[in-house]
Length: 93
Ligand SMILES: C[S@@+](CC[C@H](N)C(=O)[O-])C[C@H]1O[C@@H](n2cnc3c(N)ncnc32)[C@H](O)[C@@H]1O
Image (cartoon, rainbow, N blue to C red; front, side, top):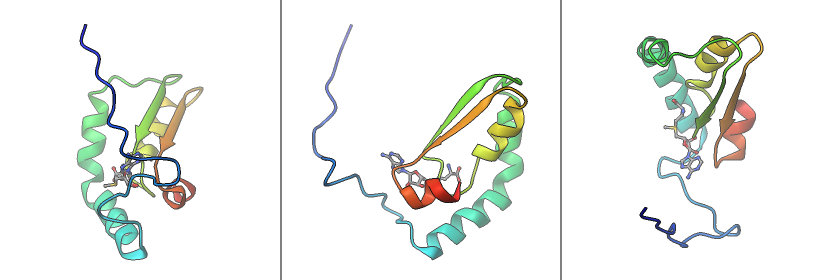
């Protein structure tokens, strides 16, 4: 088995920076992207085999995107968790 340590180039004081940022313009872009591509994302989700009661995690959930689609598919009784490096994005999601 090959194990490799992650590069230690960030610290809690120096979190990773998302290249596209998180200003209002980028949030609007993500909202538009979610609306325009939502049906493609939904079609992909339908192939993932998610069922009510499942748990799913959206890594890099952004302010909007696929977490809503995950939540719809695992309800009732399931859980969709969004994780994002940006606290504002988490709050909006
Ligand atoms: C293009 S957005 C995707 C938004 C949403 N998931 C969608 O499908 O539209 C990428 C998101 O990933 C987050 N992100 C980037 N690098 C990350 C990291 N290392 N850990 C956690 N979140 C990260 C950014 O803050 C940003 O909100």
